[in-house]
Image (cartoon, rainbow, N blue to C red; front, side, top):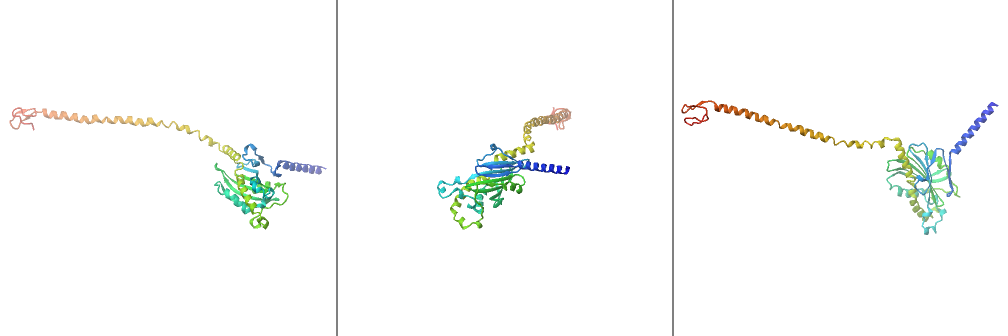
Length: 328
């Protein structure tokens, strides 16, 4: 009996654990487009107030990710951008994945993104995840703040709408993490298979839609901006907050700058040497001293008596008092 009771307890515990995991995931439904997908546990929805795009329906941030990882679901109405004249020949339901090939889609994306210096390593390919076909776009995107992120966009066109499922991270790209979300996507409004084709797979029937392809090329170019910068403001703001948190000394380095103001104090030091140099004029009296000492020597020589060699008169002056001869 005890063994049976223990097994019952374990069974109940497993059920509770499974139930917690089920409720931890978030079910997301776009009622207007009749599209649904599941967000795994560990993601938090970003408030609409932090999103600056009318095309974005939902945006999520991965919890406890210091680098920053985001998932964004957005919708662009391609048919709305078709001219009224062209709408007379083109039905909304005709615009889907099969309208353009992978190569054509790549050319359209590249024509716009490759001219953007912030975009690098652009690649476009066909991808099938779960039951759905996509145009898979991957690239690196660099922001003015110096951040570089890896971006993966799964684009799916049906009934005149293009849906974007964008996964972006400033850390290491995790393909399994992406597929765990994309694999849950359901296009509930699609009533028939909607395959993505390459040029080689394009059938004679599709070739006849050349006019439609030209229309879609134009509206896709208009839609390209929706592929990049989807939640840029929210993303950059969050990255700046993390930078401040991880590097608090950055804000303090500006404060010591006023210390440079006392630098004018060396000016009195430059005056001090000038004052000390003034006593250098004192040697002048020293040059006068020898002159004064020499004068008594000449006077004493002149005052000594002498005998005139011409007349023999003894005198003390410079000239002989008797004959006037000059003293030699």
